[in-house]
Length: 91
Image 1 (tube, one colour):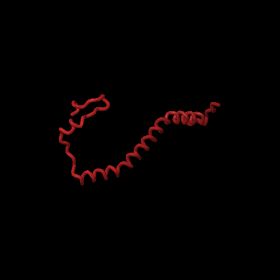
Image 2 (tube, rainbow, N blue to C red):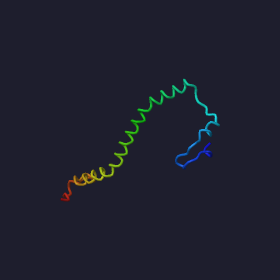
Image 3 (cartoon, rainbow, N blue to C red):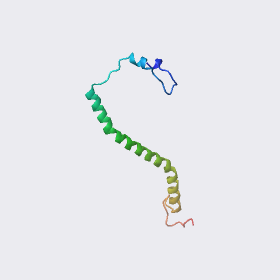
Image 4 (cartoon, one colour):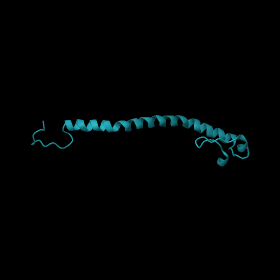
């Protein structure tokens, strides 16, 4: 069927006459309703997943800068390496 489609590679088009030549199996109406109900139940989860993915991407993007600031803060506070009380402070 794909070889009979026209249009650009991104958006193929099938003529109605081409599609009419093929038998396309469809589940019984009760099964279609069951599938539609299940899809309706899952769609809110898909939306929530999308929001969580956006939040994760934002955290990933901010991590390097937050890590850099944290390391600098620890360095200023002298917490990067064990401190020896017998040594004089660097300042």
